[in-house]
Length: 492
Image (cartoon, rainbow, N blue to C red; front, side, top):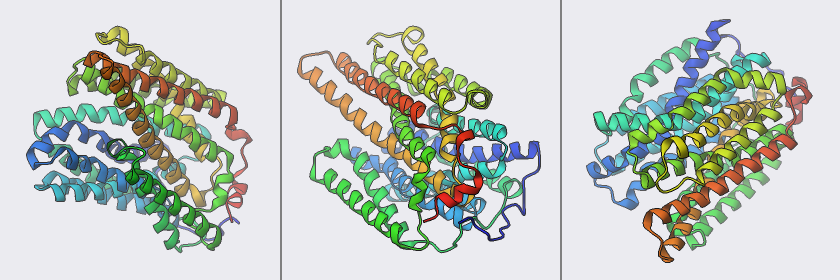
């Protein structure tokens, strides 16, 4: 049933015309802080280790604490937005992330920094989970929505490599503390402008009751799964710890599904996954995220470990792909979607990305930037710029307003889990291949390159499979169910 309650969702609408685009800019600036923070820390880890006395094992928690809470609270954050208002949850998440950034920047001990990073992840999860819903609120016309999704897609896809460059600049010019402190003025400005520009509302969900049992079980399941994945390479994928954590995550997920099938106001209406576009988009998103993580992290390792680039040079190496991605995401991708629908740009973009990864798989030990790095970067930037916008549009195209926050959380969770799992699998594959080559007497650089090449090829296969599934199974929005039927579809 559709929700018949009167909400104040449009009681504070954004200004018409340029006001909506200014609101989108502010919204994306807040999201960019979250995206940057997932990679900006990596550059500063050696400085953090030396300053606070981390061991190699404990240093991983500077990253893992963030990933655990970020991955664990995406679904819950999205549903809370549906229940209590998307702007309200965006502001709460933004405030938590900004204050936690201040705490990280002032941290003088290992425990304090790790705890602050966990709070950062929680705030980042809430902001990310409701961002797509706010875009849906701001833009209702298909053409404008496609353009807005393109801007958001560029921020999400390009922000990671920008974070590497920014991390190198701040750490080199000042200290590691500033990679966190720089968020403070940005967060304050985004918070203040969001109050004025983003639409307010109480939320669209039919019931304001929170499914506590469902929230606890799914959050715990996701956190266990993330913990198992990020520690899989170190502990071993067949170790008792890894298998036990994954088994616990599966068991909790099964309990969650049982709860959702029985409660009157479920956290996640199971009928949501009867929406074909959402289900297919999430499968494609998992594969695409695995391929993107292969590109970003493994190509950065190739540039540093094999070609000897410093962090600043690595960031600059990604600049051409970011510029092409921006050109497509900020205009051209929307035109392609409006002209050809979702499937052709998505399939074509993912195939270009697969070709870019395949090119990296043939890069030599003494490769040059112009011949062996730039072509792959250009294809990957072009592919990402074409594919991400239609993928996001497909995921949200059949979702009614009562579940848009939840659907946004599901999409972000698919990307998060796909990227984490893909990176763990590909890193393990690269390590195994490198170990085998070293045991056979290969030179260290040749062995490293052999591992990266194997991972790039598998990543290319992920992207190609995503292209085939997306082109074959997705429907264009024009053939999707009308708005009036969307909420009806997902009602238990």
